[in-house]
Image 1 (tube, rainbow, N blue to C red):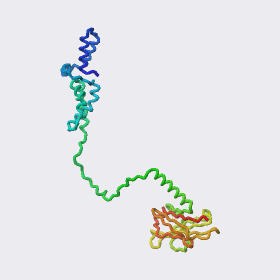
Image 2: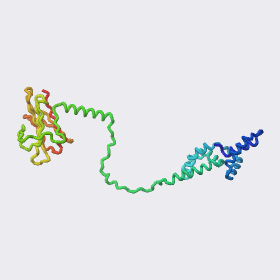
Image 3: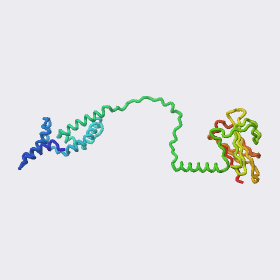
Image 4: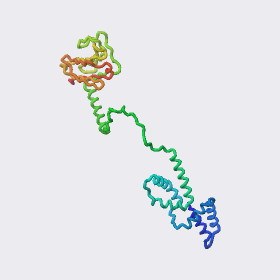
Length: 286
């Protein structure tokens, strides 16, 4: 974009050329007339012709720098240091160019309008009651690396597989799997109320039968006792004593060993934990 000064100089150069070209003189005059409605523009042109200052910017470059120039002016108004020398050429061009001056005014209005709805920074803030946070445990900032979590998952899978194939695991599940028959006899001869019973026979275990009986606690019906009885059905098996039996429910893990009759009893087990309970019996391989 040509500056007003360049338009005027171009028209004068065409007008006083040694061999004036009528078409070029008319065209330069038409361009000049297009910016003549405001007499102040003419006065600014005349002042620009007399100024010895070298205008180093064209209008496109000057208007591209106007946002930064306005920001620097706002910073200066707030007392912040500014780079005066960096925008000296912009100030010089604005002093000589009415077009860029008008663009500066328009952009300043736009900036002011954009900041009119800006919420000012608060000087005070309300006091919030955070007493409910007192005593709260601090979050653990340590995060287990991904490869460690993968190794832990693999090890947990291996442990589960080992527990599954090593002997027999009985799971009660969300409901009682087997209702006991009336007058069912148990190995220990217990007379308490029988709540449920699970029997795994020789068809599933070579040479063994495992009987799991659950009795209601006579003193508290919210508790029960679990009796595990082992029966030897194979001639090669000489004893059912000292066999490890593990009971798990929730976060509780109890390990006991059968007595000389092949019986182990877990007492005071919450009835509402039976849905999550499991019993593992590690039978001898021979």
